[in-house]
Length: 391
Image (cartoon, rainbow, N blue to C red; front, side, top):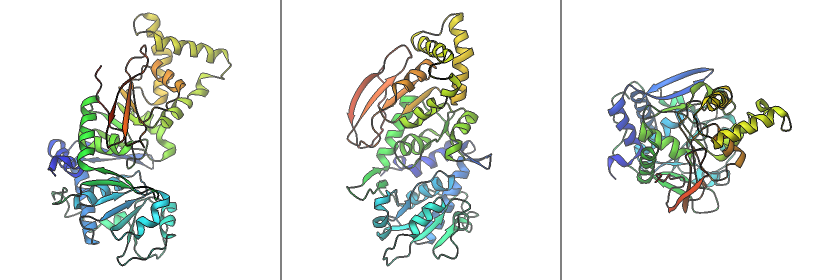
């Protein structure tokens, strides 16, 4: 496998090209903490050293239930740099995953995840190490459990300047055991290529600002978030918590956004109270203005007033004032959501069900006055692969 076709190698490319640039930001207790690409690579190397100290070798699996912290991203890339696989099991597959001798380390993000893992009784010849990435989690004197900071404490000082790519790679980057069928697997080369294709198709650059509103370990976030972050070098922002996403989005003002239909349906529904009651005159007037905004162009004094007095403030409320493209991961976006986003001048791209690995239907809504059209259907082994627009 070539060095350019792995996620850790993409990290190293960013270090070589934009070492001091901001790579990652995470909000904690209301304060944004920042990592440059060089600092991200140093953290990945420290975690890699911690993993190898626990006996983690090529072919082993890092088990992650989910997580939305920088430490989770560092651990994922570190495990892959050693040559390991990241396993993201469903609840039904958790016991079998933990019983697998290849599962060497488990990341837990909160108290519920820790208790869920500790409740599983398995017989193993090899010890299973649990690393807690969240804060405020209690595990008493349970053996085999330690905090992330303790896990890497002895390895940070020697990490700077070390090669985080590692000598060997597993072809598989992620595996998703579900307990019932053959697990979905995503390999490095296809992920890297899909992210590169998406970067070129959407003109994503290191100057883009992105908020990760959904999991970066599951589709579509693993592609449009994690892999594309590494392929394009954009600034990735991790919100403080699930219930602060909308506030953090308004604060960041992302230029590029992705997520499921549910995320954007909820986002648009959230502005309902600002529009007035459904049967009110105010609401009816705004609906008419939005309808005209979806049909009309941007010229003339009336259009300018409409944009600055209504459409622009609504985009600000949604946190989409600077966004130049929104990519939605399935075709189930509510018509009302599409209508509002079109009227607000938000460029949309929709593509097929993120859980469908047989193919992707790509739909582009590239102008408010033009209806959505299906561009093409392609066969692909990566769900949510974005096909470049031909228009």
